Image (cartoon, rainbow, N blue to C red; front, side, top):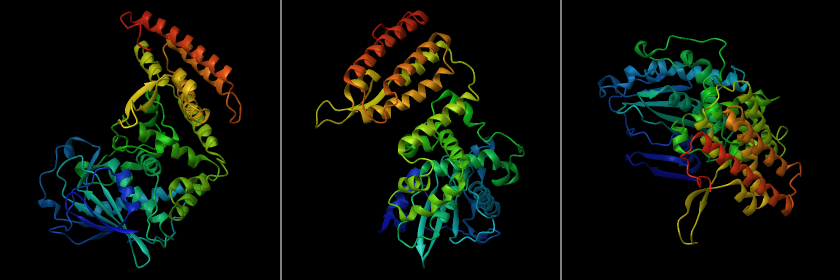
Length: 447
């Protein structure tokens, strides 16, 4: 269904499908304050292949550049000619990641519309339109933008062009946020100084060869638990903006990198992109494309848990302090929930224990929670201070024993009661350890 939608700034976006709006919200949470027309527009710049066309206002007469343009190497001032070159390089790098022949012809054009930047934190919008049977794209960019947002925008546009090539409908393909974010982070890690070009005062001259593409993700995922597949599937604005200490970006990069390392991983990724327009949502296309690797959803969860553990084991980093270990173990053992005091009241956020999960949830819901906690406990054990390392291992073994190898069969009530009692005993030991390292901790802290 084609809709006409208005943004708060007054710009009307026509022939914008509902799924395209969802794409803009997921990837680029805030709407950039672009104008419907670009006063003082100069002649468009075309990339060497002709696929990318840069449309710009007279940026020389725009307001003074924010200070970040001078002091922050993470920002780039966009020059129309150099942006056309950068777009081609992003496409070439992305095609290499996906194993696409560089001689493959393109179909949809990408219009890069620049407007004067008024602040250093403006976001980017992608608009997908179909005309005469071909999908084309307009990417609205502030003239000053962070390298991360620019790379993510160009990556999203290239992926959409690949996905919509054979799309004859009026609904644009829906891309998973983790795919765009993960590939963008991979490109930034492996070639940003070369693929993102900028005027001389903004250039980064250091080019690292043969570096670990996940080097920046390692310290992030050593200090924070990697996100689950479900969490990767539904990011919020703070995660997409990097306001979660970069956990979403690091997790997405690791997930995409590991998928591409599978046998036929790149081919499966291309197949998923081709199937997106024909599927109601991206999850259906993903499951179909990777069916040989993950016949069931649980197979994907197990694989991802093993990948995260292996990643942490090859670079565990320094131990946490006793205080940090205490806080991390508290976090791992808490289960966030929403609760209502009455059916008509709004839900409030709360945290419950693993015992409460075992005593009150049905087994299908228990498995989802407890399998995630097993992974988090195993990861945390590598970093725990000696006072908490043994306890962390004991919690892990207790939960692993409870889940066992039952192939979906729920444990007996006796087993559930026994496991809850063991967890209660471990909580008592934990309180004793916490009191020993910090005597003023209230005795009812974990109750």
